[in-house]
Structure formats: structure tokens, C-alpha cells
Amino acid sequence: MTKEDLGYDPAIGQYFDSQGLAGAELGRVIQEHRERYVVRTENGEYDAEVTGNLRYSAASRADFPAVGDWVALSVYDQGAALILQLYPRRTVLERQAVGKHGEKQIIAANVDRAFILQAVGHDFNLNRMERYLAVCHAAGIQPIAVLTKTDLTDQESLDRLGSQLEKRVGKIPIVCLSNETREGYDQLRAHLEKGKTYCIMGSSGVGKSTLVNNLLGEELLKTSAISESTSKGRHTTSHRELFALENGGILIDTPGMREIGVAGDSDSIDSTFEAIAELAGQCRFSDCTHTEEEGCAILEALDNGEIDPAAFENYQKMLREQSRFQTSLRERREKDRKMGKMYKQIIENKRKNKF
Image (cartoon, rainbow, N blue to C red; front, side, top):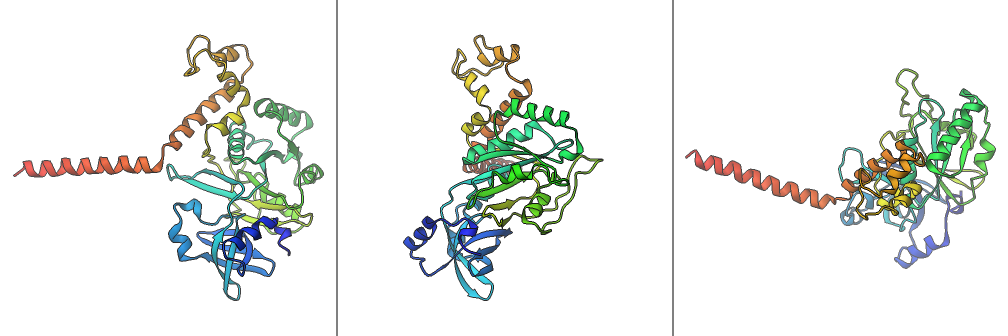
């Protein structure tokens, strides 16, 4: 496998040379396992970990390698290496870290386009699709909607879902395919370009792993289906992994994500809800809350049926989440520190008053 098969650009090598790393091995992270990595180079795959300097200089978890990153390696044993430095990321797909308020989780790095999979039936959810789109817009990545399991529905129902999707999210590319019959695969392959990196996102059980297997032409990943009783999928992909296709495209498969917290700024949400954001700029008052004000362009559009109420509700919800998230972790920790100090002072005063 050559560097070009992994999406190499000459600027990557030039950057590492400028950093005094001309003699280092150059590779791309293809797997991540709790701060241990598998890196692919022209000479093979290496189990790698970061150096102490890189670990010490990292300001947050986002400064550690992620699947899709280009890195400089120092090989110290057969099949083992140290990651010396990361190449600056062109794009970063990220979301709010689950259970870690105010922190981000990188989904994948250096991605050009994202395939957002939803199964026609149990998994189809327009609110969730809008969240995926906001994540893509925050990263400057082109989203492509992929409706899977089309063999389980009829054409009329499929056309209706496509119309609903287009009405809510606008004219983004939509691919309808069946992993069983392979119908729609030619349309999907038309989006694949040599040297471009594609991230596959979606809930568990929608067909992500099957899609990767079919594109690779071999059964590399385990697969599962959405449960009929719970309408939820089982996590068969437990980590992110990068694959090179024969046509030159690069795929990054990701675990199923049920929570998609938007970590970007409000512009990424406005890009997802263009019609609503444009109307918001036409309101009489610049600080309009779009709830009861006279001259509110959004309220007028809702009354006229120009805006889907469900889309507007999702828009407001995501803006509230984004506003809370943008409150820095440092400010929150400082607040907690002050509250803790005050609490200790109260306890100390109570103790003194007893004597």
C-alpha cells in the first residue's frame, strides 16, 4: 500500500520535514484504542503510542491522535512505534463528549465528506439527521444522506421519506440503497473519489458495517440489525477504523451514535437551518426570541405554514444546547472551585460556633 492509497498529499511530507522530522516514518492512524493506536505506513502497520512530550504538551483530549490523523513515527521495534507529532488537521468531525460536560470528542480527522446513514423504518428521524448535518457543517464537510434497507419498504413510502428529508434539510445529496439487493451502490460509488476520505456515521444497526464490507468486497466487520422490539441497534463496531478502497477512496467506519451533541458554533446550526436563520434576520427586533414579539418573521412564517414547527423546535433546542456548551470548561471549573471554597468556609464557621 502506498501513501497515496491512504490519501497522502505532498504538503504533509513538507510539513514534517520543516519540523525536523525528515527521517521519521510517515503514516496515518487507522485505529484508536484508548490512547493506543494502529498506524498504517508504506512499510506496514504499527502498534503505536504517543511520546511523553506529546502527552505532556496536550492541552486536552483533542490534542491526542484520532483516526484519520497523519503522524510522524519513530519505529523502535518490529511492529511497534512512538508517535512523535501530528500533522495539522484539515477538518475535524467532533461532537460533545457524552457524560463530560463542556468537552469535545473527535469522531474523525481529515475527512472530506460524510455518509450519514439512516434506515427507512425504525431509525428514520429528521431531528437526528439535522444534528448530523450541523456536525458536518461545523467541520466544513459535505454531508451525503444515505437511506438504507430500502428493500424493506415500497417505492411510494421511499419517495415520501425523500420528500420529507428534502423539505426539512434542503437539497443535499440523497442516496437510497439496499445492502441486500445492492441496489443504489452504483449511485453511492459515484460519490467516491480517489484520495478523498469519507466518514460513515449513523446509529447502530443501520447497515454501516455491511456497507463497508460490501464496498471492500470482503467480510471484515461484524454486522447486526435493529431490534424489532426496542427499535435500537446493537453496537457491533466498537472503535473507529480507516479502510482504503480499491478505487482510491478512504472510508472511516464509526461506532453507532445515539447522542449527537453539536460542539460547533451557532453558524453551523444556522447553516443546517438556512431558511429559519434567514427569517430570523428579518425580525423587527434584533434580540427577538421568536416567542411572542410583534414583527417576528419566524412566527409569521409558522402561522403561514412556511416553516415546519418540528424543525423550528429542533433549531431552538440545538441553539440552547450550543449556548450551554460554549460556556467554557474553565469557567465552570472556576465556579465549582469558588462554590467549594464557600462551602468549606461555611462548614468551618459552623464548627467554630460549636465551641
